[in-house]
Amino acid sequence: MGTVLFFTPPPGDVAAVVMRAAGVVVIAVSLFATAAIPEFLGALIFFFLCVIFTIAPPDVIFSGFFSGAVWLVLGGLIIGIGIEVSGLGARLAGTLERVFGGSYFKVISGTILLMLVLAFLVPSAFGRVTMMLPVVLALADRLGFKEGRNGRTGLILAVGMGTLITPFSILPANVPNVVLSGAAEAVHGIQFSYTEWLLLHFPVLGVVGFIGLPIAIYLLFPDKIENRLKKEPEVPQPWSFNEKKLLVLLFITLGLWATDNLHGISPAWVSLGAGIVCSLPVVGVLPAGQVISKINFGPIIFLASVIGMGAVVTQTGLGESLAHFLISKVDLTEGSGLGKFYSVIGLGWFLQLFTTLPGQPAIMTAVSEPIALATGWSLPTVLMAQVPAWVLLIFPYQAPPLVATRALSGLAISKFMKLMIPFAIFGALVSVPLQYHWWKYLGYLQG
Image (cartoon, rainbow, N blue to C red; front, side, top):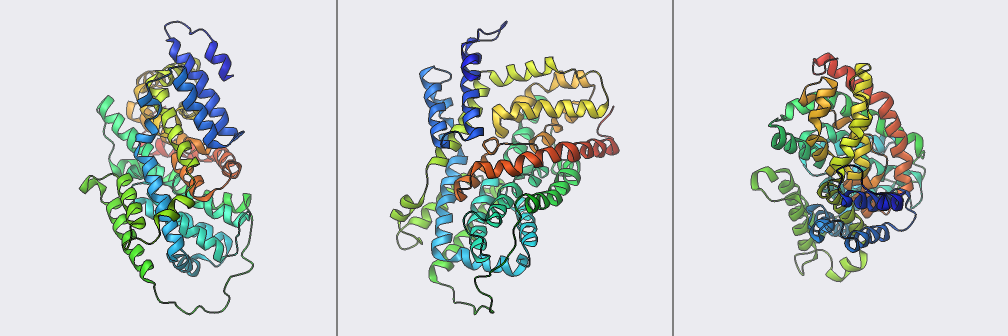
């Protein structure tokens, strides 16, 4: 399919580079979605094809390496190693076990609750993943969930999906939220407040996600806590010097992440700085050589390619051409209000397969006026209708925080998809109609 698109003559006034970009992007998406080859190799193929066929300038193709997300994940990987090596992860995991560890379902629900609470405090999904996943992996070890166990998979997915799905309803908590908010103001002069965003989305996307996600994980990855590593009451062990140093560093890092609007330092550079401190002689907690030996750079290359792909889709005009094509093929003027709602969400859902979540809101915002004219809805309603589409993602490459979860945990892509596809279907059948009727109740949606 990708090869056919690459050599297809462009229709009408579409530039030739758009068709070439479409071919390369379809090839890359196919490799990323199917995991037919290792993810880093698919990423290198994407870079190679874009460069040799001059799909976009090198600074666009390799823009992922300039993105803060890549450096945030790298810093997070180093912090994660420090949490593991210092023993702090096991100590914090013991606390979580005492609070949530009564049963497998309780520990899954508790983890998702914790990720939701952190979403109000830490405005970076990457930061939440990099901080909590090492601790949750240590908790999995304490509960006897070794590699390959459903319980371990369930806990990993509770962190990755828990830091993504429900926080879509909290304005500063995820990158697509911020991109949509910024693009709406820049392109249309429309500002969304924190309270308005929360009122429109949290009662459905937040609550349904919080209730549905642990149930889905529990049903799809059933397990139970059988053998505790320590059945007798634990004798508190004194804190080591490295644990104390790392705990102080984590509190400082968390504080800087939570107050980035005040000091203006990106969460990426906070994460990278914390990783550097972890590796420094004397003040750090692990030798620099151990960092190099433990980090798998493959997922970082993959993350850079996913971000670069979104930039290529936007820069070449492929995203806007695809959006206009989809709008022309979908009749938004007729049908029931719920049918229109599904159609608009379907446009966003299909587009984000190619743009990924960080790129989708910028393109959908740019083409929202013809959608508003066709549906008869207000422009703010059309803009906000993008958000329910984000919850319906079906591949981990679409959301960089899930790529980060994959990088830190090593969990197979197939495990992500085993949860994401049924949960997307559940969202389409339950969350979307509820969202429509909630907006109707608020008077936000006419027709």
